[in-house]
Length: 223
Image (cartoon, rainbow, N blue to C red; front, side, top):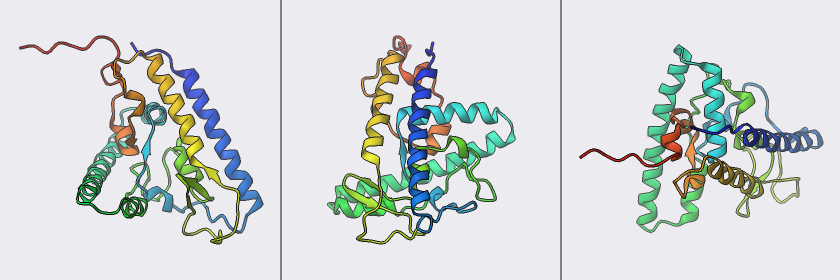
């Protein structure tokens, strides 16, 4: 049986609120630089992975929001197609790396990948906007990860100038800590469960049940 994870999800929501507040402050101080507006979906065509805590939170919210009706099925169909495309893209990157291609070039290629989010509706609006991942929430203001800065291509932040920046390494560390706590709380038998990252599409498709989480003894296969 999966234990109650409400406290961990609440702490994830608190981290999300902190990030939202930081985004709002930057937008308030630099209103002419932030280009985010209703109807823009540029950040909804990116390739990125979710930590265990975010993936399970998104999955839980998705199931609670859409039940098992036609829209639920349509979203999962889009998620399945997006996941196939993401898998092919990552497989090609892996092959390029094995062939000796420069890792920095591969990272830049991944950052420029265009993959439509399955949660976008026909009007390019997010169907789960209030529950969108942290990566989606900070797109549009200056961010940095592993020492590399990034800004939205539509923004007006100028190269070479100093701006308040969201340091995603620190955010990621907190997500990793929450994921580790989640793995410990469910008493998983999978030692690396907290290190599993999945695309948003797979987070929607996955059934986070006791078998996936490694709760209880492993089942013996019949001969």
